[in-house]
Length: 416
Image (cartoon, rainbow, N blue to C red; front, side, top):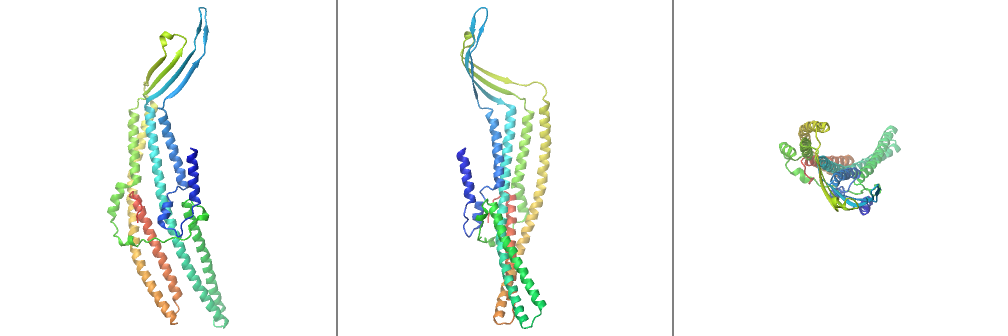
């Protein structure tokens, strides 16, 4: 046990002290996500508690050993008798209907706890992916802000030069300076977002703040948009057949029905076996050195507590059946909502890709005009280009997160 605790502490320390590769990829990040965070550790404790409870019912069937020693005598009118003895007693429970039913219920509680752990892990995958994407978006937004700050600073300098030769008013100068200061504030704000998004990812990965990720590799999801989007009916059928939570609800329903059957058949029969080995100093011819026995207990009469258990289980069965119907309806709504979002993101990707081509061509024209001193729109063109790149990246990430949610609803692992 001490070794296991030491190994657990060592692994926990190793994760927290881990130095992340630079740059960090999404694939490696998802590998790190397999390490338990605080929510998972808490649920792991719940699983262990359920395992202990299940083991306690199994322990009821383990044999027990007792030593019975007695030094005693009795003085009567005829003689002084020695009533001393020494026995080894072995008792073993062979069958107990109540224990069997309780053990069955505890085993199902353990399965439910493990399913909850799987849900926590699936949710963490989405959280880690979202946190990873948010860092990339924060970096892109920061770059856009820097470009706009540089542009506003240049414009403020030009107005300052004009003001110095009295070609610009003080109002125009103050306006440009105010805009520059606002862009400085925006830069500070976006720099803070860069830090907080990295801290969030480190927290999800159970990594110390000091070891938060630095550079991240933007994943390429272009191939996902080249694929034809499956129809809604395809996802609907797959999710209705394979949804993990729906399967779990059905499993619990089967378990409740089985518990009800066990309770209805429960006669509270208990069968014990005993074995006694040893010697005694009295009535030796009648008792011998060993004794074995089988004890069967069958209660008689009506058991009102058991009737209440059956009635309670029947109510739980009806409740579980309603939960299944409601979850089926919710699944249809979730599937339709996510699928509709996928269609929107896919079309928006086409639109933003076209817009990016336009922004790129416009920037090239702005550069050419700038070099020929015809127009000076190059700053705006650069800012608009990076802003479109940000919108395109965000749309891609939203598409991937939505697709992952659909895959999880269908009981599939994320695959890109």
